[in-house]
Length: 320
Image (cartoon, rainbow, N blue to C red):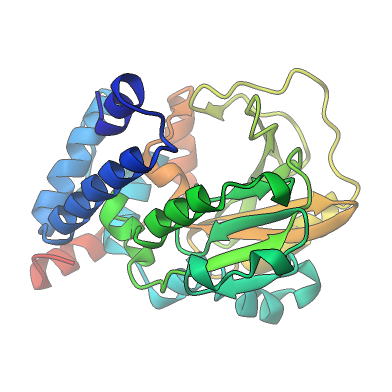
């Protein structure tokens, strides 16, 4: 049982200040330990987690499956461009250059700390999230009911996160943390995530009801439902038609994935308008199981992979 699970079960809920204090102390110790690890220690830790999750050995020397390649890539193949595009603030300039600013969700503000936010000046509904992590989204549907002290504590914790030292997604290491506030656009929005390999989009998955009863469908670019999925999400139980702008979405993604051996490009469709979501280089941090297993190999085959990169780095460096 993890610290988080123990505290929630035996002490307090996860919004209690005492829990948040304990959780931050736990994260601080983890960050310190992880940041001092050598590459050999990082591989050993990831391999233990991988065996526990998948029941098999992670092949660092010659990765074959989609998830194996994610792990090798996230540790040994960061780049300044990946860092720029993983930053939800910095990526906006790149999106403007690539496809145009009309595809960006408007900003209410970008802040270096929670204390900078003028809550009285915010609309009654809005969204808060960080630029340097995942899972920090807060949907505010009624500002008058917001517990500001809880949010202050929550974002104090998130602002100290560094995904490089949580799951060794090394392209996150140098992102300066910020808080973003955007307009609230609804909580039942479907998003479209395009899996791209070798500068080409191949599949689009659609998430449904992410904040209630999360389901996921996988489609090819002809909108044919595919026989694979991730984890235990399961398919949506109703027929789904492609958005009317699907051809435009595919054209946009072809521009966004150009030059990448692998990336996941996310788009939203809101009131018949296309908006950019994010660029993801380590889908599920490499720990979301592809079901059935044969598709983990099928996706891996689409990803052109230079296994010499890891060997060169290990020959020159002992730690990140």
